[in-house]
Length: 118
Image (cartoon, rainbow, N blue to C red; front, side, top):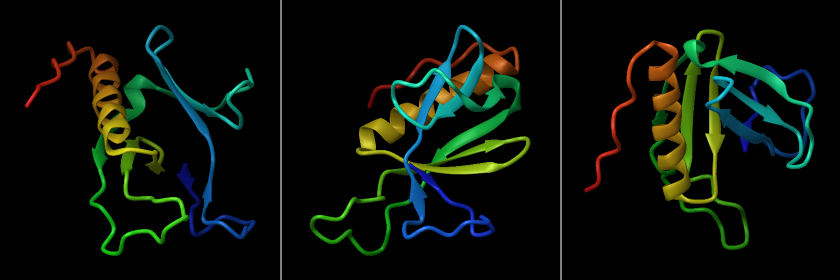
């Protein structure tokens, strides 16, 4: 999920929008689409534009039962903007952060670091 910017021109009932993000290591771009099956992509970001990704702390209050939890969030910093993204699990968020930081390293011409296992 992508959290909407407070300055968004259209205000919706929800403060988040579902987007389907992809990290394309062959083309060295990070982008999203509006549905899982669409080939139209929005806002492609070159790996060289990624400044880094980091996990967000969990919220102070747990989500109400039956509501979607946003506790598995992370930030993606690019040259142009900062994305606040949320996923279904902590494991997914950790994998996204690792992959986005690897993409950043590739874009900077560095060899990505190997994932450390605890």
